[in-house]
Image 1 (spheres, one colour):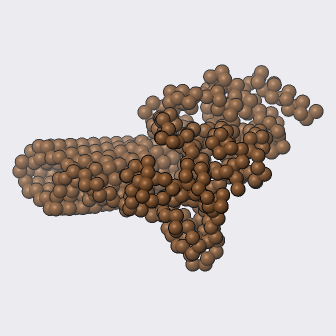
Image 2: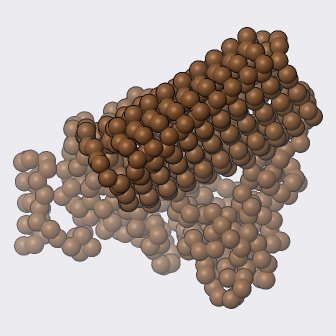
Image 3: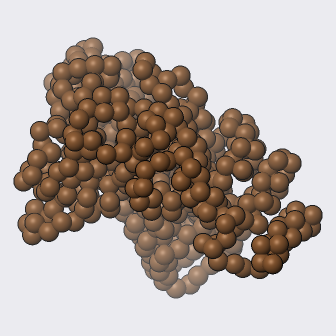
Length: 616
């Protein structure tokens, strides 16, 4: 009777409102849930009796049987997008939240905002006299999905009012923060950004438009801004424009981040006695691109300092257009600017052109650069400057210590650095195959179903993931992107056979520190084997890029605390024995100091990544 009642309920749901839900049942006892179906599928496809991996099964869709039937029908009818909020919430997906509501909130007293996110602070603190607003752990939601925050006309025309942003947007994913006319016309006061958006994935749309424009004697400080970020764009338009005796400091900005794009347009333009300092800006970055357009243009007595700017970064380019053009008495110093040999390029167009009594100093500056229409007058000092082509000497400091290592290090008693193996992507779930099979896997199709805005950060993420999945496999590679566990099982068993086992590192303890290697177990007796490795892609639903990896050895190793010798983790490592087809610029060779085909390369399996092997 219970079985027939459930079938009748599902049938009625398909006929009636698609948002109706049956009475609650224990999903673990329901044979129609996605997880229950998956377990039966697993038993049918995999022939060994190894325990089913909880870390993988936990990623199965949380949808009930009724919800699965409803959303599958909506997907088949191309009407799923009309029910997107409910679908994303029930299926645990990455989707944009609704637009922020407008708020004209004002306050006459000090305020502390802790553990906030997705708020609109429009016209907040306008004309405020004195006081402090503190944003601590704001939007810091441990992988919060698509947080949006809007600070529009915040602290406009205030006097001696200070703002403190500490750990703002940390661990966010695809964050969208907007600071429009922030501090415009303010007098004195301090704005401090510490550990802003660190670390984040796809930190797109960090926009500072007309930030502190027409301000007087105001101080802005960015310390630890988007450090260790993964992609994204930051825009500073009209920042400090027409400022008077303002002071701006960027310290550890974008350090160790992966491809970033930062634009400074009309930054400090027409400023009077403005003091800007860029210290440890974009150091050890991977392909950073920074554009300074009309920076300090028409300023009077401005002081700009670039101290260890983009040191030992890999690739990337900087463009300085009309920097300091028409300025009076500008003093610009580049110390340790771009000290690397990694095919970087910099352009200085109209730099200091038409100015008077300017001073420009380049100390320790090197790499491929061009100076077009550089200031005809003024003092220019180029110390240790090298305008040379790429020498082929690659730096390795920017590769995280411990990310790659040699096979001989996997022996008991070895103390080694453990990289940051934490998964920084948002928590999402696989989709049931019955729904996934009805969804398009094209950029336009995914954007349509999931309501992804044109030109948004999520649109770029979707495009990158789809492009990687559609990329032709490398020589000897077999690859597939999977959005369901059933598809992953099919791919792994198709490559390795039905006797397979999947493994990942047990936890993240020891991450970013030193560990001691304990007992080591070579999978398949330590023999050379083939594996299937699966890596997460950032996407609305949980998507993995899986590919065959020939000629490897896979190990499990107890990881111990070096001091107490207590076991803290059980690590899974894979050693690639044939690296002859790898690029000479691969991170592994930068870190280990060798080249393709000369050494084997080992690495740990990071949190929520996994490797499949033939069962022992």
